Amino acid sequence: MKKTIATLIAGLFATAAFAQAPAPAAATTPAAAKVEAKQEKQAAKAEVKETKAAAKADVKEAKHTAKADVKEAKVDAKAEVKEAKADAKETKKEAKAEVKEAKADAKHAKAEKKAELKATTVAAATPAPTK
Image (cartoon, rainbow, N blue to C red; front, side, top):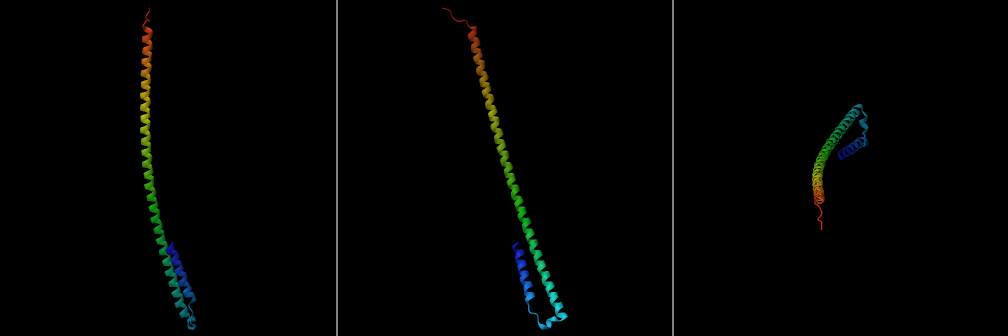
């Protein structure tokens, strides 16, 4: 963008220089007018060429910047996916541990209930001693 602006400013100064050049009295002849028109045309062509080159450079730079931004976004996205997978894995591991603990607690409670029931049955089956 800076190159484009600089080129345009340089073109304006060049145009102003041609426009302010004092025309000699003999320059009013058709041949002199033709030469002057040719020079102005060449200057305009050069200015257009420079502007096109500057614009092309700006486009190239913009493409490069855009590619770099896309590449960086892809890297960030991959990192986020990797982190999310790790979090999911950890959550799954924790859930499995909780299920295992719950099963162990249930098994323990069942064993206690069974022992309690057995103790109650044994106590009921044994006659009370009489004195």
